[in-house]
Image (cartoon, rainbow over all chains, first blue to last red; front, top):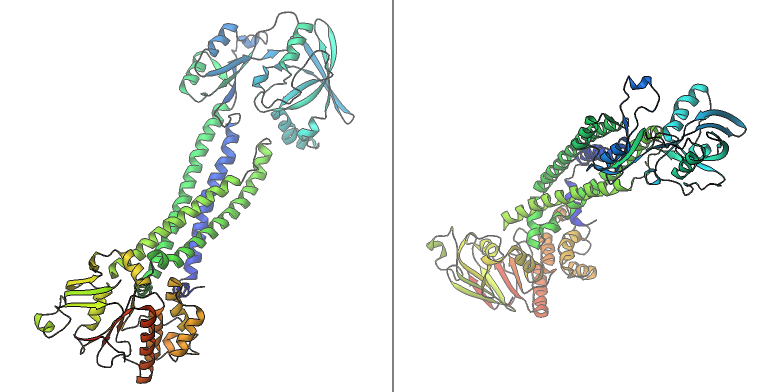
Length: 398
Length: 214
């Protein structure tokens, strides 16, 4: 410890310094937590929106009360309608859901426990399936048909049905071990083995490879491929006014929840932004309080600075002990804030993890960069202010 | 730096009568490297003002101070900083020590800037000037004479072309003043530096090349 530091330390108030650090740690914690919370939660609310802004939405026709009295296929999309949607600027790609033109009866069993049910099957072109497994294909003669279920089904079971019936919860891996037998009845009957290939957030149906339904409709169906009831649309502009206008004009309905979650994401973003701004404000105020406190110490050391100046010290050399204290305090604040954020984040990730089973909440690395930027930024700004004050004293002595 | 010139130098607060009879004020004067000068005057004649003008910490004067032909008013702060570290040493009348620091720390605060002396060299100088055993003592507990010797050693802890000493032995007895003078003479021989000493009457006992009446 040099003699310069010894003289500066004499006028430093430890209580004042700790007070600043606590206030600043609170501000930095609020700011970092806002940043992290935003990064964690908003993508979850946006659901199937990828980082590129690409979004998949499901389009249906609004169910007409009169049509609902008829058969279940009154709201199909004609080829003309599909082509019209595909021609719009907002449409990157569009395709209809292919439905099974035959009836399906499924038997499911796991560890000797079985159940059976009537079932429906649908397919979409492979490019619309989110994260298809390597086995996502069917060639006649294959031993097993891959099936994708909506992740909601598993959530519904795990978080509603299983607790109510006192049944064990099922993980995705365990669910994939379920043995499925599909009894197909149409123009003729056949039995297929099937397996659960994965879960989808994007498509709310029991999905099989398009190649399977194409084959099965041809083999077991009536020979007339039904028109699709639902369309899947890949778009970059689902939030645009033109998109909403088009859908309203044609009385189309866009997949449930997309609008409300987008709005929720926007409102949450705004709310988190305001909280982050308050955090930053607290940071700035506490930083300036520290700088003002340092100014007072500098004033008490005017004699020391004037002598150092006459001995040949530069303002940066004279300011070094203050800069060291301020930088160390900012570093301690950043570390403290990161610990706080880590603890609080663990608390909410436990809860979010249950609601958003597919959420990637593992990352923390980006926050280190933000904390480093806050720490270095505050230290640099404080150092420049302290330097200017000391240089000012020296100028007045010259 | 080889030459310090004074050209018509006079404090702004001095009248013509204050300057009359002075060999320094309102005159042309040259101090050369390697030579020793004594500036003598009674109290109130402006010795400390002269020192402050020459070392660039006061500018309330008329006329010019020139270092190697260049007016010191044109020096940037960085130039002064370099000079105070590597060519121009000043021992102030009020010593400008840090009373809360020890003797060693006071010396170290200059020496760590210049790296001029080793620890043992500083200890040798302290010993030679009668301060052995005082290195760990706070300056506030030293006598004025002891402080004067500490300030003297601190002034030496850098490369020197000129050494300006404002009443350096005002609190020293004859014995210690002679030791200080012998150190100054050795440093002049070794470094070839010029020395300007001011005195009220009890001067540093050195062989001066010129005595100047202020």
